[in-house]
Every structure is written in C-alpha cells, then in structure tokens.
Length: 136
Image 1 (cartoon, helix red, strand yellow):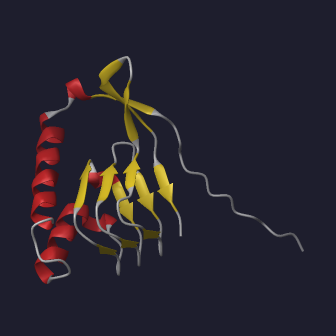
Image 2: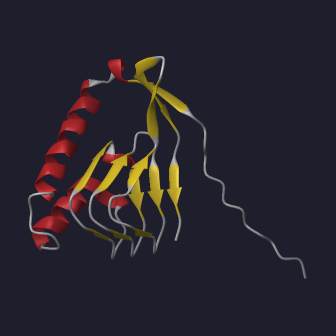
C-alpha cells in the first residue's frame, strides 16, 4: 500500500514594501490597530471587554479557544492568523508585514518576538518581508 505524505509548503516569496508610499487606508488601519493594542494592554485580561478587543483586533483571524496574555504589541497585526486553542504568553511582539501564521494548539512563550519584516540596510524606508509559520 502506497502512503502519501502531504508536504505543506508555505509561500515564502520575499516581498519588498516602500513605507514612503503607504496609502491613507493603510495608515488609518495602522492607527486603528495601535489604538486597540493600547486598549488591550490597559484592560483587565480575560474579561468580556478584553476578549471583545482581541476580536476587534484580529477579526476572523483568531481561532476559538485561543488565549493571549497581555501586553501585546505589533505592527500590521491584521496579517497575523492564530489557530484554535493557541496560548500566547505575555509580551508578544508581532511585526507582521510579511504575514505570521500560528497553527492550532501552538504555545508561545513569554517575551517572544515574531518578525516577518526587516529594513533594507541600504534603504531604511524599504522593508523586506517573508512569512513566519509556527506549528504545534
């Protein structure tokens, strides 16, 4: 009997982003996310208000049963996808311009930095971005 092995490949194409050309929509969304992050970090954790703010920040990208301990910081948080039953301990920094995916049942330790973008050393206004994938 032949056994098929599924190899899951993530699109790892590097993209380059010139931050000087950010649209008003992108700037407005970044400000919205920054404000929600501030609110999250100043709200009693694991309350209805706190959970509502997490849903407002991540939308449908936050899986059922997932928990995130504050504080939480990041940029382009709309590009973070968190699976079901994920636990993220306190002080996560998510620089997510290139995309960050955390699959079901993953556990993230305290003080972790997930960074999917970096500045081009020759042009600091240009970001080089590649996705980050965290599995169980």
